[in-house]
Length: 438
Image 1 (cartoon, rainbow, N blue to C red):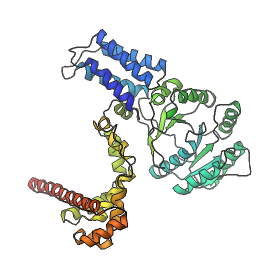
Image 2 (cartoon, helix red, strand yellow; image 1 turned 45 degrees about the horizontal axis):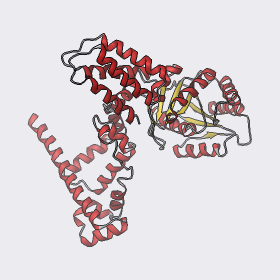
Image 3 (cartoon, one colour; image 1 turned 120 degrees about the vertical axis):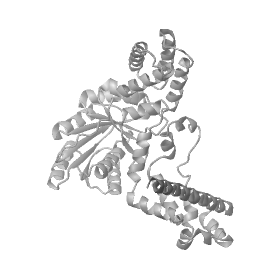
Image 4 (cartoon, rainbow, N blue to C red; image 1 turned 30 degrees about the vertical axis):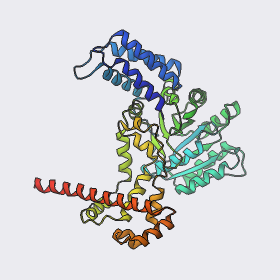
């Protein structure tokens, strides 16, 4: 995501490196390159021009602080303007204390139905809502079944009328059903089309007029670039939606939609989809996205992901085991599962400042832990708890059972011992410092 744009912007700022001060000439040269970078990222031409004009005015109107170099000041100005361009502050979904209705809209293939499930799961787990989904796509084969499969995975019900071909009535009945059964969130999945057409627009506009949703979201595939922005404008002109959802931001997207859409439709990006899993959904934070575009990482989001998986009681138990040198393969496997829950490994690593550029050409396989898990799972419960029992014959059995070889088993055992020693040393140092303070 944004790799090419980040690289181009970094090259642009190098024009100012070594310069003693900001001048109209070197700023113009830098921003000419910045504008090219934005256009290559499929940013709307008018948006790119206005953006660089604003940056130029701000850059020429400032003196370079003694603590900053011209290139550093330019990066700071660009970062601030990118944040403003994408909306300034995060905008969340509007939730009422009683039943909140959310209407989903978008083209076919944008990931709308999958996102419906993702949003329900997020609001169920993080906002303690009691959701129900409504299947109002009466055209696409298996659309109702797809929604039911997603709903089953996250443990929420679906309202549907398989024999009806009237999505407006289905939506109206779904609202009544949600109210009568005490649900406080209803998310309505509607039909998409392969292209914008009047019939589709009339239908979803009729649904909105009938149920008067608290929130209307437009879901768009970020990989479609300027087409996404144009489609958003068409939908907004008819629906006056409340916010945008960008899906497939984990793909090979140039970023033009994320950078242009707020300016063109004047509606905030509220959520982003970052993968296929149902928990691969994030609130859109313009400031964090600006930092990532400029190669500064996103340590705030990384910490947030860690905190979501962090269990304080389990952490204390683990610390005690480490101090007693009782950290075993069961604990090791549990830590691997925690890391995997946090999301795509390369995406996580790119959140660390300075790492994104270093790993951009490295393929980090999400199955990197697969052989390690297979080896551990081929051990008996006693062997996992007491790794010192692993002699030659046991290792041979484990290698065979895990589909690996004896060298891979030995390598894991060596790594495990190294991790165990390092963890004990780290907790020991921490305990020592605490004792000295006392």
